[in-house]
Amino acid sequence: MAPTTKFAKARLDLREPVAAPKKHFVPGASVKVLEFDFNPKDYSMSLQGGWNFKPQKNSLEPPEFTGTQPRSLEVEMFLDATDQADGDVSASVATLLSAVRPTDKSKSSKTPFPPIVVFSWGAAAPFVGVIKQVSTSFTLFRPSGQPVRATCKISMQEYDPSPPKQNPTSGALGSNRAHTVTLGDSLASIAHAEYGSPSLWRAIAAVNELEDPFNLRVGIELLIPAPADAEANS
Image 1 (spheres, one colour):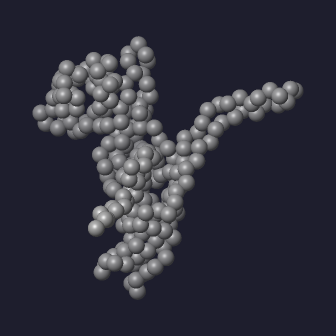
Image 2 (spheres, rainbow, N blue to C red):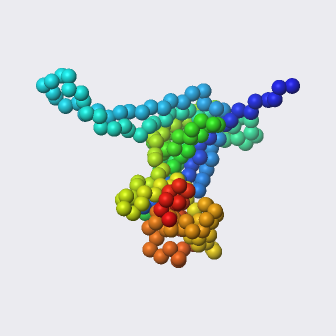
Image 3 (tube, rainbow, N blue to C red):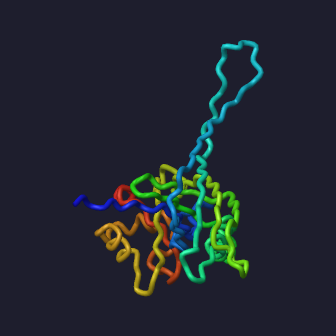
């Protein structure tokens, strides 16, 4: 008997934005994961190039290429709670709508920023970005008025989670992970857990611009450089 094929489910992972040096943000802990009840039948991705067309006497002179805009992604999420006795899709819709606004944690730290969202589907490369717009149509209701079906149109814009590179004289460190300091942590112990070598602690201190690397405050978020960057800058 042939083995049954298991289909991967598309999902949206909403992650807490963590403030990084140079007024940048990286994805922190997962706030909420929304798994698609039904995989989307399609999704679209677009990329726009920038061109500077100046009035020219010579029509053969080419326009100036000014770069590309971040990619955008459009996808529909179909929500269905009819198989549950008290099913209601309101909570999932509210989660999607909240992803357009800054998180409570970022607002309390006076660095308002929305969740960094990762759209993934099986082995396909994940799309990391922020949700620009959510449009919802409720299509089926219980006698009480509770919505049990909805179609949500989600528009995302790509967001690069890597902090801007530092001045070459101070080292160019990139990061796409974060670590929350707990009681007993030290830079050496974190480096040992992340890289297997406590001697790489200086890279973590550098990317976080720590004034006192030997006095870590419990609860702060530390950016973790990629292993190659850590080895090159320690």
